[in-house]
Image (tube, rainbow, N blue to C red; front, side):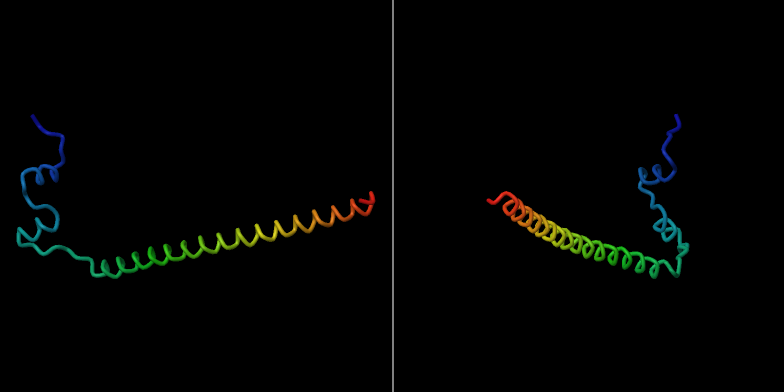
Length: 93
């Protein structure tokens, strides 16, 4: 009976090397991409830069939230005091 597993899975199950290990075991030189290391460094630098920028944006967003909240509370207090003073002046309280 034939298994539905891929040839790679059969190689792994039987303990034969796969991929680059197979190529080096058979004496072949693996095909290397000369720009792979540079692209990998660029990729990881971009991820790190994005993570740092996300942290900065998160901190700035928190600061903006508290500044806007304080300004809104100050405006509410100013409006309430002004309204209270006008009501007191109008009704003689």
